Image (cartoon, rainbow over all chains, first blue to last red; front, side):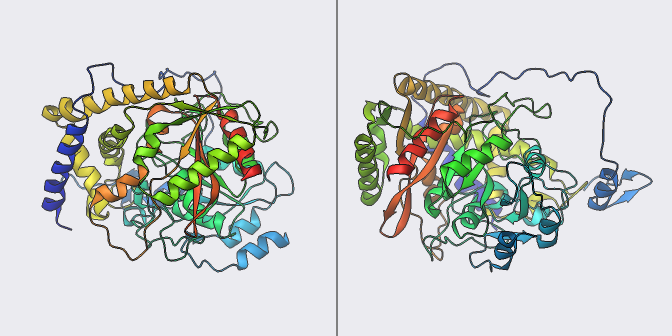
Length: 74
Length: 426
């Protein structure tokens, strides 16, 4: 894939989209169609799947001493 | 073990509807009780199913075996539903044709040689081909309704929040919604009964009824159905236009009243949608860094996914936010407000699901605008968070078409009622 070409053609697309919306009046912005609320759980003892950790360990490419091991910097 | 399940397990996947099937797990999970007892389902590959490959149809996650169940999957299992396998889809749900999957495109069982629509391509194809009784899809801009329309089955996107998104690999969080695909409106309503409802694990989820199927009312007499004149302006295919107007006539014959309404900014819906999606998708994909699971997304994804990531990153830079993203958020407010005005004095809106028929599988389309154009009628429901469904309306040139029904927020029952009423007379 030619990343440069994708980006350059994509910028043209963005300009077309921007042009299509140029008449939209200044108004409030809709991020979500509903109000997001803080959710608090009722007091209760937490539960977890005891097998989850093992499944997750299998997914991580590098796992050591109970931690996911990652490169410092690429 | 039921004969029904065995019969379905014997069927060969001729349309590439599945990424992976799990016959043994399906057999083991069979139950004799529950609202979905005996029903065999497919799940879109972006919904986590414990122990199943949840790849989002991408090389990025080709080794990701889900370690937990999404809330919708837990509910289906609890009610006796059998998850047969993971359905094919557009990569990370970025597409409207089903062609961008790392596992190859899905062919349309109802129109061989053509694309199935997308992004829930395999879910719709599996139902259409009779491989499963029902399926889960996800709909960010029409990804349930579009393939349902092209494959000749029923697809329903619930009100935003009616179904928990916990366990869904998000494409654009403010627009995504999980929903059912089935062969009848009754079956789609039954699956919705099971999956709808509040979930503490999803802060946007709402309390929702669980008796849609029981309350289905097919009586169209006295129903006021809005039809926007802008629909006709944007339908690109004469056959589809004729089919939709014939459907309006059938609804009138069934006792409904068609009311003219207007959606002046409908043509702005696609630009609004994609500017929102680029930003949200870029944000959603930051977790695919290859460190805890899977591989780094930018090094493993296809062209459309990379385009959305790159443009989302570009727009997110401070100097462009006002020009692109802020404007798109304002346009979303305008479109939402116009849709609410159009719905104000009617029960629901009816119209086309798609502007054109599905293209042929081997047709190479390099211009993203061509594929984005499929979304013009469906994205409105996501931008406004309203319920919407596609119900078969016959064939156009041998290819299935669908009638789109959109309702007010939380009035999912009314949308399903009109879909069922139309299904009964179509």
